[in-house]
Length: 307
Image 1 (cartoon, rainbow, N blue to C red):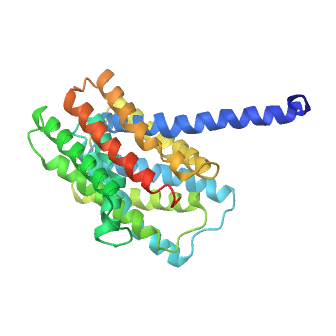
Image 2: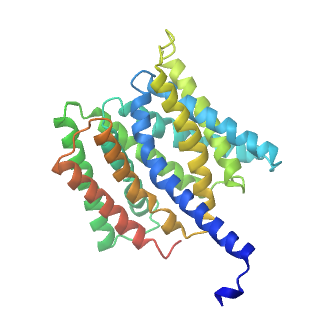
Image 3: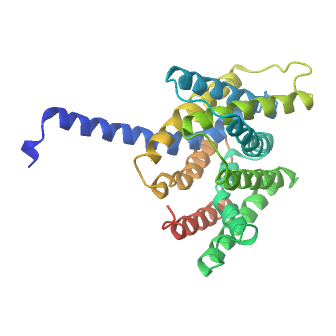
């Protein structure tokens, strides 16, 4: 049977395997590394300005691709919905993440972001009443919030004596979860690239307006070369390339398989923060991250039939 496969077919299979490996590497490693890049950027760039530049530039790049491909643009109703979703998904969520990472270690930030499925499950049970409370869900919630508590205690004892950045991180993830759940019932463009390009662009503009209102641009900040490289990396690799890989993977693999990046990203972020950012890791970080990921695993396994 193998002999019957022609060389063009073998070449096509090999090409797909390479693309698959590169795509998973993008969502696993690149997305995991963005937390460390954010940490570098906000050292000299005001957080809302850094987030706004990242997503506005990424939105412009993706929208240029959409125009070149002559993909249908959003309708007036879709533009309105995209603006609402961008407000929820980018301003509190990423604005809060960039602001919090001025003091929260990047590895801990990545583990806190991994609690998004936990927050979504909580809202589906108690707010939307779409899911029944099961023992598996209770276990996942206990694991997730137990992990958050340990990570917060570690961060406070590690030099950040204020709990505010960690509360901001939680509000950020709640905002992202609300925005994600709301978009399920919204009329949005059929093309995920079009929708994401518009959301990134609109979210970037909103963050820049927030930056201006917060006085981040007065005086004009002195941005280091390292920060510029970090923003460029976040824009091109974190938003454009990794997102394109994510969309491609969703078209070829089950959502639960693609969603496995949620398990890997915190590990990558913790490793980069430890090796290059000199972020301390102790038993609370390991235990907290393990509990968060255990909660995510339980939730995603419970939702496997939905996907």
